[in-house]
Image 1 (cartoon, rainbow over the protein chains, first blue to last red):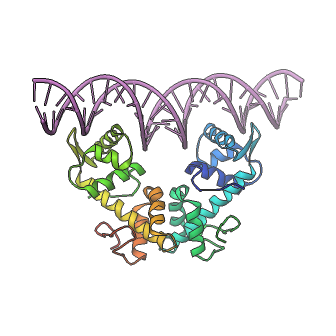
Image 2 (cartoon, rainbow over the protein chains, first blue to last red; image 1 turned 90 degrees about the horizontal axis):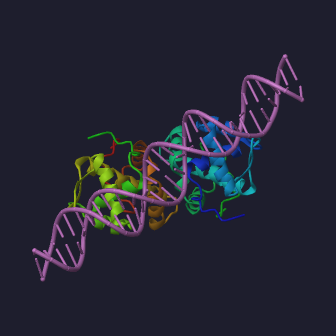
Image 3 (cartoon, protein in one colour; image 1 turned 45 degrees about the vertical axis):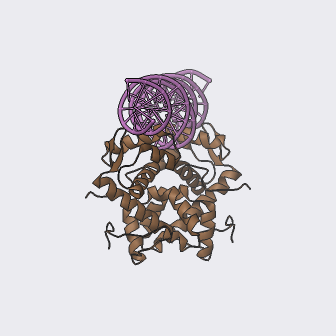
Length: 140
Length: 140
DNA sequence: CGGATATTTGGTATGTATGCAAACATGTTG
DNA sequence: CAACATGTTTGCATACATACCAAATATCCG
């Protein structure tokens, strides 16, 4: 259980973790490269970066798995995405547009801000992009 | 009058243009470096980048000035900042926190999204960060 | 003019992201 | 089980954004 500021990872790395959480279990680096439209060598390298900082375990030639730390972060990232998407949808953006828009900037929004926004919304449980789980929300 | 998507410039370059708009007229690269806390050589280089793409005119050793294009973009950037700050303030963030938060991610929010949000808010004229001018808002 | 100051240029570094080609591992099949 | 096809990683190279330092250059002012 470490403090999450929300800015630990770059946009791309956030995408990696969110994908790993979605897939669960042992994921092939090739699956990642297919999903994120990058060369397999790119996903391998990025995964190794994430592994260096303890977000994932990588068994070469076998697959990748979130660590406990990685899972915590990934869950926050998904919630952040969902809360921000819900917020934008309140201002007239369609679900798809909100989702697309948020994907571009979510990596730069702090956990503190998300907790505040989440509280102001009354800790909603459903967004336009999926469910919102509040286990990581400090203001819950 | 060119189409603005909102993603033309990197976060730092957005800061440069917003500062130039604030200062107005001919601005010294040294003033920029002081304001943005970077080495003078850094601001010179960045200004040259902006100049290559027509956002500013740079007269070496004299100063920098927004072009018409640069001014249009800068005005949009300021409005974007203000609208996003206002939005966050509606979700419980203080003016300062909203402003800080927005500064981190504003460069990745599209003009389309801003126009939509602005419309949903009823085209407000005042934000927590300053006035909002709607000349560039497509939905006004 | 000429020194003090301001500004720019050239070189270098870091972090992030990317691809290609070659090396390497795996697993499958004959 | 050997050999080949396939999947994965490594090494090398590039690009972009940002940044600093030191050296060169221009401007300003006494």
